[in-house]
Length: 224
Image (cartoon, rainbow, N blue to C red):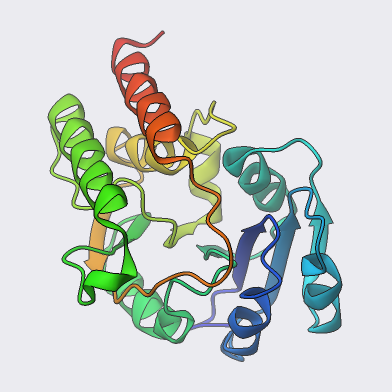
């Protein structure tokens, strides 16, 4: 519990046995609930997560957004914090993120990876793609966003009731931010965090996922 607020951490995973142990080991003691959503892993991700005390949910329908929706539906905390299972986001920054959230008076706080402190943390291709998508999202929704694709957020669980989340794929990351920006009852802000190179194989398909995310932004803007 953090300042009388129950905290749930939700981590979507697909074959993250190389990183999930490090992530779970570093989760602070004030976290009340850790939910790992196994999205069809063929390695030992789920077994490792269970052994380390996480509540493991199996979501066989593949998709980043689908995994998150499953995890959110089981969360019981007042606040939900998200992390990737590859240890690329700083787990030890949770207290920093939550403290900022409590003081910024918005319902959704996103951790921005930019500017990168380490050039090796992200490939040039991913860096450029992220910046293009963030620029397009900022342009289309009239709000400057530094990192539209960040996967580390903290938000009030009841904010989900005010969101229309349709994406089951990678575009979910930008959609949940858009919903927070559009809804004045929620509110959106960003805060900088240090980002590291992931552990394990990359799941992102840069050109395909980037193009699909761009199309999603346009459809979301047009309401189709």
